[in-house]
Length: 437
Image: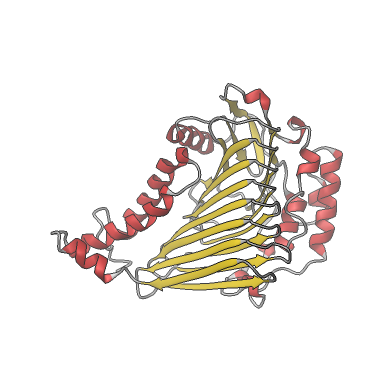
């Protein structure tokens, strides 16, 4: 069970053990999320019982599970190049698979707390406080992964982190912290995956992204966990003066897939782009919550969240643009598009604005509906069979947002995973499969 003793049994430096103890105290005094809360509205969170899960047991730091090692190698090939990579099993980095390929790899720090001098000040510097599940991550994250890029360093090629779970592993609490110094640049890719298993599991990742003045930070996450998993992820990002923050989350796996992305532009002229895509099949639930937080003047943010639901799956999008007093001439845009491919599928879209300043530009738009009949007619008029036309339209719908992704090396990987699931949902030739028709 998730007890103070179980948290205290986790290894690590004294400061990390003390932080876990504080995290457990906060968790024990914080009620679990409930669907009655606005930020959890439309979600199945009331079905979550922590009594159904236990903390993961320690694993060997050498080698790693065969499935995870194979996936790490496969993703590296798909990327073409990587400045560094690590396999994380049960929330613990497997050091024997960590490799630095960048010519200037020694100019940035990457690894466990003991490998990164600034790890203590990085952990919790962006994601402060949080709900009970964030606190649970604070209390039970075994060994966070740290990436620290000093001032002026440009890292060539993305840094890859593959999180892997094995059957029988009830829970995992991965933690990733990225700090980019002034005028520095880095790209980070996280993949969350596991061996096929009918057993329920709970994965609660927390990722912190910090970009200093003039820095550029690009981030992509791909969630392809087994079908019975619950993934409840938190992404917290902060950009300083003139910084560029670009994030792209893609949710494909799991039974319940939730991402909450809070992106704050706190320095003048900071820019953020927040992309999110999801594809629902069967009875999946995809749940996306975003915050575009404008703290400083002349900051910009652009959000595009789009996905499709088939079968009996459903999606929830709820986003908030917040402009603080003093953040004059902020420019924020929020767009959510949803394709509903079957009568049994459903999508909810709830855009929100909280504007506390004048002289700003803010807009939001959302669409929910089936494939556009004009698009279908156009394609069919070119001799394409009606049962194939829908597949082409849906594939183009996803390819458009994938092509906008912030890390070009990840494009082929994302297309492969999305197309494979579309083939399963629509049929290899674009025809609707019987179960989803």
